[in-house]
Length: 134
Image 1 (spheres, rainbow, N blue to C red):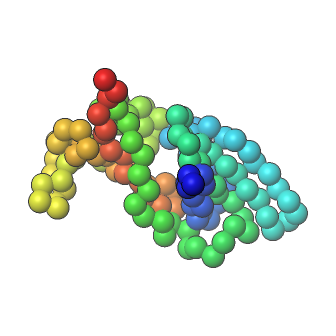
Image 2: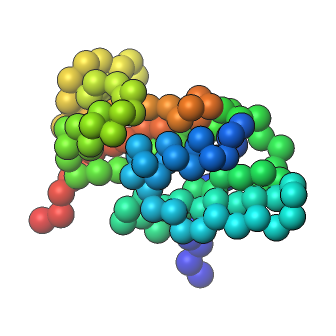
Image 3: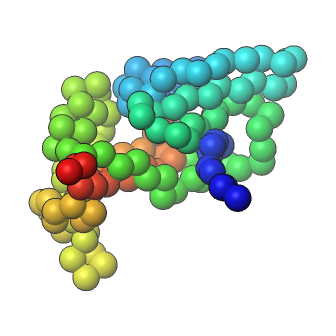
């Protein structure tokens, strides 16, 4: 049996602000923006090429906005990914790697080159470089 992660709920305080951030600045595709009454709204966004989406909205759960840490995306070119985010106005860290569990400046090669950013509420993301396909 396959078990596939399809959606991660990201707690935000302002749905419209978060929708703009994730779609216009980070570059996620808006799949749906649906309201079902005055207290329920769901916006689903998907990173280009991803099989998993995020959902932001109202009435989705009890998590505190900004409390989700450790979300991770993967890319083939960490420098290009960083340049794209910077161009779109995202405050993103320099390329870093881990040396004995501690973040250090500069790339560390495939699987050990990262950039980090947060959404307007403080939900934290990492972007990791993986090897390009052969």
